[in-house]
Image (cartoon, rainbow, N blue to C red; front, side, top):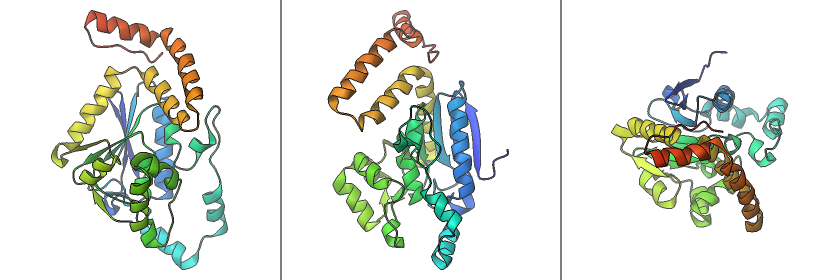
Length: 275
């Protein structure tokens, strides 16, 4: 089915999903939500994809929920079907915690790195979506705001759980209470983003770093490490330690381990299979 509000492209083992409503700063809609999830699932299935990049077309990443939709809710309230959809959890996948199967929290359950390429404003729901990505690379022209308190809303879609884990409790409360806008430099200082690149070089830098991750690192290692890190949020140290012992034994028997040793000794580029 053709996409209406997103673009999907694969090159150099990197799948790029682009929110494509530039005239609206990629304001989020139900159609976009469905298309992004479908694209994420396609990228996860595709053996030629090792890294996923989520970005926005034009000047912004995502300006939050489409205000015309919020205006309709403010005027008329939620109809019953919308209310039910908002409260209903997504379908479950075997071996995945319910925590990572919710409406936007499914990114951590995808077995490949998901990188938010924040080319411009990431506001409200747009910021929520960025938080669930594994890494956040920002243009120096990007801006960030929770906005919710200024709309009479609350910390939506699990942001109250995720944001403090990234920026610490004091910073999270400040961002949520004030709903102020911060720039990329401040976002980097507090740990909200991992890297900041100049706007004029942003696209090239994102491609360069994503290609390096897709070609230089074992896909199997990335898959297991991602599962370990997100799982450890709910584990004791002893439990995380025990899991790491089991995973280490499995990795020592993997093709990627053999290739990791071979390419180092032979002083050549790796040819990881992901197995």
